[in-house]
Image 1 (cartoon, rainbow, N blue to C red):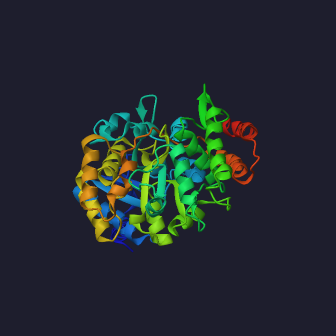
Image 2: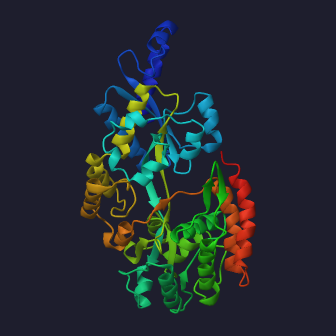
Image 3: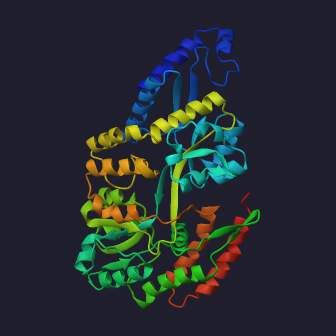
Length: 452
């Protein structure tokens, strides 16, 4: 049992010795504020015991925050938001005061009025205006704010620097366009010995996910709002452009290998084994290649997504229970800012991760990559100062600033349909791209019609 569990267990024993009348007096309709002026807030996002380092960091942060803010008591809950149970927890009074949300969640929660309007409160939140505006927009609607982003990722092009060198390519000048990717893939595949120039997913909804990334990269989209409804928006020139490029690499150039119907683990294994030149990925793939597939940080580079007209972004943030009192909202925002969005704690957080052998210098947490201006510059400076990986290998990714787009509504259902499109292009030389897109559109539109 950790120190917080012990403290709360003691509190429960003490409460049990009090009369019901006394307890009722201390817990009357006070918005979560006890007689002594202390506000208690429940928060989720606590890592499970099976992740001991992350759990230790979280619990240490709770203790430090409470010591610095003696008028606030944090009740941490394991786990994150589960869309299947969210509404029932809210209706039953079981939803935490401060709850985690993926970037795909806020739009629906806001539409259903299942998150508190915090517009007036964020005005007093330190550094809120320095958060990248496109990330703030994920949690906003019609000029009102309903949550705060705390971390994000965006898709880029992950490549093998060793294979680039062997193929006569400059690993410090990675491809910037899909045409350049195609040419680099030819040179890598020409090395022989089973080398694959470029790989792509096409199963388990991952094909549709990456087709979405392709669409964004060339300036297209998968779904758009038409009045008060959503409609498919890929059966067009942008969709045909993306699929034709993929088809040409697969069948005309033969740079994608014979084995298809791949998922992320297949591609990571190929890259970790030194057999793959490039694939679309977020920065968190790099530690996976090293830790699970015996790769080396020095062998990998990450650059911006080809063509750079847009990129798929994802991430997370925190929202507040719509039933939370003003006191709880203020306390909750104070916790979110202190824990996740605190430039004064950048160096401490980086150092303790470094002390535990965690990689420092990648464009991933422990310091949230959500900033603009001077705070972003400070973050970059500290990551370079404490780096344990070659920061220069990922600089072109950090410097690229394509427009970020979140996933489409009902994303997983849409992706399942688009998997079939990707599979057909990658397994059938004679696949009819226009027909595939038309068929997929007819299936996706009913899925999007369900969006409220």
